[in-house]
Length: 38
Image (cartoon, rainbow, N blue to C red; front, side):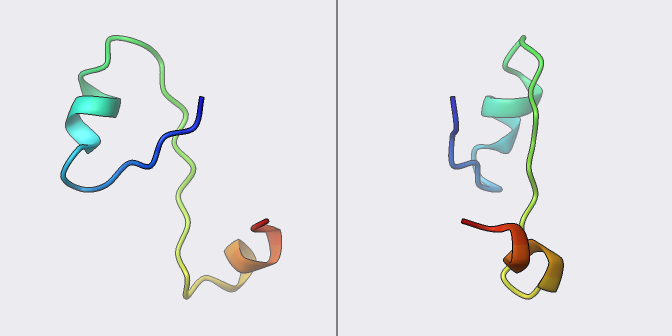
């Protein structure tokens, strides 16, 4: 399940979830990120 995680909800959704989490970091200014983005 994909979720939009922000700085405001990162602790709640990732750090305190009680389950393993995979975090995919992306930045608009990152060339390699833009190449693999849908």
